[in-house]
Each structure stands twice: as C-alpha cells, then as structure tokens.
Amino acid sequence: MSSYKITKYTLNQAKNLGVTVKPSTRKDKKIDVFKNDEKIASIGGIRQNGEPYKDFPTWTQEKGLAYAKERRRLYRIRHKGEEKDIGSPGFYAWMLLW
Image 1 (cartoon, rainbow, N blue to C red):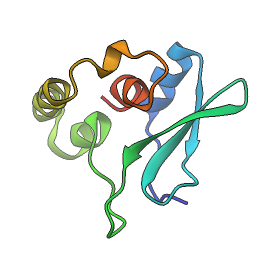
Image 2: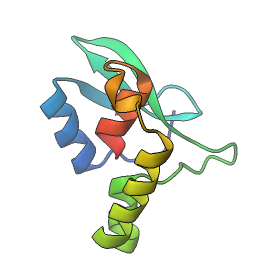
Image 3: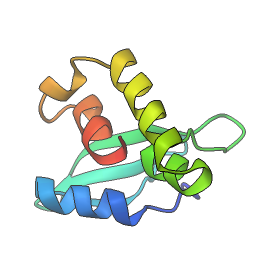
C-alpha cells in the first residue's frame, strides 16, 4: 500500500467528477479511483525507491502556487490528449492530480 497522502485538492476534484479515491493497493501507484464502489483506475506513479512522483498539490505545498502552475503546464504539454480519453487512467491523473 502506498504511503502517499491524498490531498484535499484531489478529494475535491474526485467529488466534482463523481468518483471516490483511496490509497492504491498497487505498490507502484498513489491512488485507486472508484465509481459506484468499482475500481476503475490506478493513477500516480511511485518510484522503485518508494518515493511518489510529485503532482500539482504536492508542488503547491512544497514550492508554492506559481511553481506548481508551471509544473502543471509542463505536465499537460507532455500528456496532451489524455484529458480527452474520458475514463482512462491518464484522464483521471490529469483531472485528479494536475
């Protein structure tokens, strides 16, 4: 189970999307996404050393909003198009973590 702490940002985003989130049962993922109590995706990477990759809310807490917005901009350039594949893990990562 992941040691990643789900942020208020992610919980609010999940509520807006009509899904729930829990810490992932996969060692290489941060969050499991559920709809109607059915798991639909595992999102957010965890490195082999157990360190989670940073996301928008983490960057906001660590370096401030301006820095986090720049990281978000770069993430969205790298992952352009995933937000359109509704229901995919990439969609949920885009919407819940970035």
